[in-house]
Length: 210
Ligand SMILES: O=C[C@H](O)COP(=O)(O)O
Image (tube, rainbow, N blue to C red):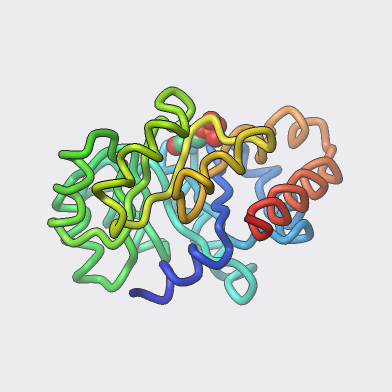
């Protein structure tokens, strides 16, 4: 198992930064770090994502793992790795991205939905998958697919919040990806970084207790 997957299993929460404006990004990252969240995913459809990744590696790399999300294809994977991403996450499965990550020694956790996609991802060399969109599929779906596919680590992403996070871990998730409920852009844009820290603390504590 890669060091990054070990870390994911230990930390259990990846914070997803999507469409955050560069001017607020560092304060938001610091607010989450203060609350105990240390795995940060910047989605590649965020303006200036690559620059943010490089900067965060430099500024927070000793405390946080910084990776890229919404890595849809090989070009995006190359851009993300060149910027310093330590892991790559996607909503989809592109075997070329998995292969590239393996060659570069960067963890790739592709997005999957069906059992066929999960097994395809696993056979292509992905050491874990992101089951997405979890909020629509629901925790019972996760519990059912884990019966035959229990050896494949799964991160639940999409719609995860404090009132359902326990369900996903009980259903067998090894981690969760959390976007809008954790990196709340209304709070960010109105400077309420203390709320981000409080929420981060609650999620980090909830995840570690499960
Ligand atoms: O890629 C994943 C999603 O952006 C996360 O969705 P969320 O905002 O419901 O947590």
